[in-house]
Amino acid sequence: MSRPMPATPAQLEREVKRRRTFAIISHPDAGKTTLTEKLLLYGGAIHLAGAVKGKSNQKSTTSDWMEIEKQRGISISSSVLQFEYQGHQINLLDTPGHKDFSEDTYRTLTAADAAVMLIDAAKGVEPQTRKLFEVCRMRGIPIFTFMNKLDRPSRDPLDLIDELEKVLGIRSCPMSWPIGSGDRFRGVYDRQAQQVLYFQTDGVANVLQKDRLQDRRFENLDDPALLASLGGPRNDTHEAEYLLDTLKAELELVEVAGDPFDHERVLKGQLTPVFFGSAMNNFGVQRFLERFIELAPAPAPRESTSGAVDPCSERFSGFVFKIQANMDPAHRDRVAFVRICSGHFERGMKAKHARLKKDFTLSKPLNFFAQERVIVDEAWPGDIVGMLDTTGDLRIGDTLCTGPVLEYQGVPRFSPEHFAMLLIKDPMKRKQLQKGLEQLAEEGVVQIYRQRDLGDKDPFLGAVGALQFEVLQHRLNAEYGVDTKIERLPFVHARWVTGPIQPEVFDRRDDSRCLLDRDNHPVLLFKSDWALRWSEDNHKELQFLKNAPLKRVD
Ligand code: G4P
Image (cartoon, rainbow, N blue to C red; front, top):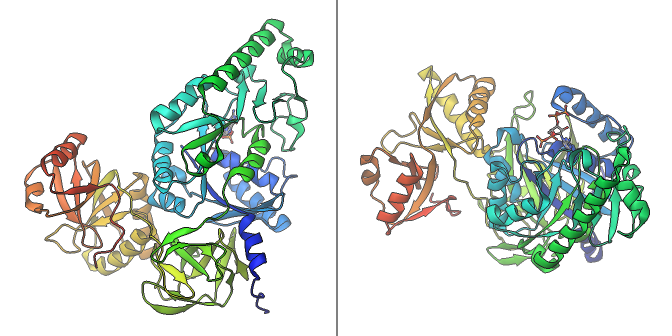
């Protein structure tokens, strides 16, 4: 096998510039799968009408995707969907199993350069979106909003915009504006192009043919043909006039009261550009993708212990943001997913493992094509590669680099909201349990807290999504042969604590408990909002942190 050629600086710069690495954040059912498919459609799999998912035919979807992969070379990995669009390399990070929301979902966002916030226009901002938004906020990455399902009765668009500010605290700039919704949805007005994209439901709306539904455009709001079209299938002139008047009035309001478009503010995550459409009908998606590519950032310099590292620097660097074990049950292996931050990655290259201060040969970089693994020859900043970690040396947050050692900031652990105690049914299997538990905690399935005087016995577990306990039990059983029992605990908040803590003070109360995390850092659990507030108010000598401190206390 021939090794790839070293990259020239011009080539590196070109590859960095054309990359867009992002994740979609949403609440279950907002349409993430549907939107992802439509985006893939633009990445080349255009002819696969009906390849569309749906829980009812999830199986055939997977196989359709495998077909797409084979035909079009689109990699649909367990971690990143990669496709080309208009000369750009798009890396869509999968925030996996978002129905069983886990810490893994949060961690993935640390590898993204931008986020697309997908909102069901009938529902507005929902809890899971809010939590994921907070992580994006913390990182200061740009957030693009897509209001979905306009073909269904939706909330007033002004209300939706208002909610972004009230609930999320982010200013917004509508890039498009909807004309009606539900039965009366007639399209969107593109404010930048000053153009109406007309939505026609002619019974083929669900057919995956790009452009078809956007063929009719109106450049002028006073075009009589536009008014005629807005009457819909019933040619209702009253309805047409009402929709047009409403559109004009709302556009005026948005113009006067809304924020002007400001690319700098978008890049700082202070202003979210908002688009309206319908993923299922493939309406508004192409415009969105085009604008997104234009406005979203290419990989940018990232902070490290040696200052900001330029992606175009010739030294290679990247960090592990996700670990997955036993992806292939036959091999019982462990794959560490690395986000490349700078330099050209070549198969077989040597890099330093910054935490262990040792050399590491990156000999088996993998990409995952559905069930198959494909060795990657080269990759660029913004890309994700999977490393087969046979020695178990890689942990979440580890940095790999060439040149003088540097470390990226790491991947924080996030505050769980569900708690339980794990009990083992057969004490003889304690060793296997320990091994499995450590591995699954490393993957982010759950967090483990030790009771201070019990060592590893009967640990407490924390999870950001309740389903994770079931996933844990199932995997402990299937992969490590250990039967366990879960007892839910009535805690609702966890806070890492720094400062002179006296654990007994919190253990004596019946609404709080002091435990230790895997790095021996004290963690307080609280049974109510009130208990948390009380402790914060009465223990000013302590800092209560929502995310675990990044520095390990080994
Ligand atoms: P998720 O991944 O965010 O959970 O959402 P998913 O794409 O699975 O979509 C959830 C449901 O919403 C699906 O319906 C999907 O068809 C529907 N949906 C997505 N986008 C739109 C849209 O623009 N308009 C309308 N009207 N519906 C949309 P389902 O009934 O749960 O599944 P299916 O059997 O229709 O596939």
